[in-house]
Image (cartoon, rainbow, N blue to C red):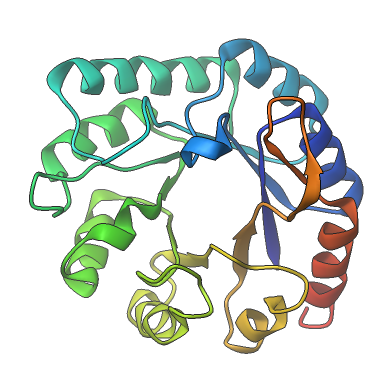
Length: 228
């Protein structure tokens, strides 16, 4: 069972590792739904962490339709994370009609090779999730991070299960959004092997960023162990 914790600060990093997380998703500016972390922060985390680090590659907040300049910026960020030793990348791009931007993604996948790849929650905006899942699988992604196109993964559970049944062993469906120690077992019971959460509680950084709760992480990890 893989418990991935979204980290935007050193405090969250320490809590994730001490709490028994399986993997980190590293980003900055979670208040903007997460952006590419700085090279300095990434270097620190990669030096400190003994568990895999997957890096969110997202040049700006807002939609996932990128200009040519933003595509170039994203490509450079992929190269940066890869050169520093990240184990995986989390990325995505859409066309103006919110369909999968296959040509852009083909190039990014090529640049990122052989890193582990997650298609992020841009997936929750696509108009045809099942068709889009198949395109993502064809592109060579290892997993899809999704809330089942709902505000929370609990609300999107039906679609998540459908996607998982289609994906089978070809790609991992990783539920995200609103997952915590109170509801995580619902996902384990449905057979999901990976979940993603920020484990946020009341504690915040000086910048107002949520800090992952050591208590919540420990409870989720303990719950996961019940399911093997």
